[in-house]
Length: 389
Image 1 (cartoon, rainbow, N blue to C red):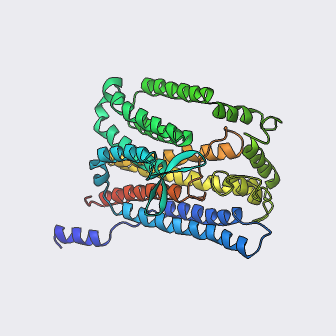
Image 2: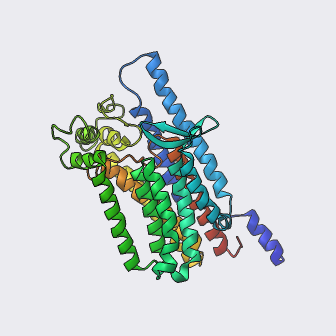
Image 3: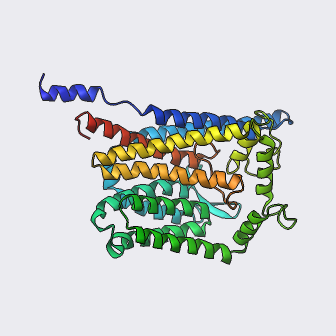
């Protein structure tokens, strides 16, 4: 058999998918679907209420289907494509964030302008920016690899795009997305060799900026004060209303929960029970055991993302490695913030729980990231088997 024929045989028997990653994602999606249905249902009602609850479930399942299709498309695209077009992707991120302020395209919900209307669909721009910022940061780090020790030549060129994106996100306003995007970019730069002194200095500036924004914005400051004393008469029916009811849900859940569908807090007591505070419903209905199970699945998924990234770096595929590890970093930061807020460990901030919370845009961005992660793993396996990508 000639070498050409061997390569043909290799192409026909291409490496399979990473089943550990797929199992974790499938488990989180399945668990999330059950909890979304539970969080949007109640014990009373009638035909109209039942139809409404079923409608939320159908929308969630449709979002999963659309997100899975997008992940499949991304999985089929070589990583070289994303590296080549990373600069354009960065520009598109800025344009997306600008588009939310256009009168016809942008859509305002509860006083926040975070959505873009396209063909009757509403897409949260910041969710797509999380993916774009990750690709841009990974490509930038590889292109500037030899200058990562220098502030002027290594960090300064990406500092301006970071400030622009942060400014546009804060105008929506969306402090949670700003924190996640900043953590993504800084994390990828650090993993790519950014000097520790630069990393710590920039981190201190970012923390100081966030603190300043909280202090200068009365409603953000009141959230922090409410977080410090959620049971205060001044805040319990106002700024700490969500947090206090979330804590009640955690307390009612105890070790094994009150049972699926048995949550009381979801009955119009806990706002956003199916999105930002779905962990509170999980804690109430499945207890400490259910919370630990969800966190363990996330741990396994994040661990796998870093393993895939390290394998790519061993193969000297630095863009792929940083991309995979960046996905793990993104999920880790978002899970910590979401669970921290729901459990009262962090001040209230709206962020969904990846793969679990209701929300089409969040599911779309999370599944696209999984498509990228699986692509990194696929190309790793192809190279380890002697093929080319």
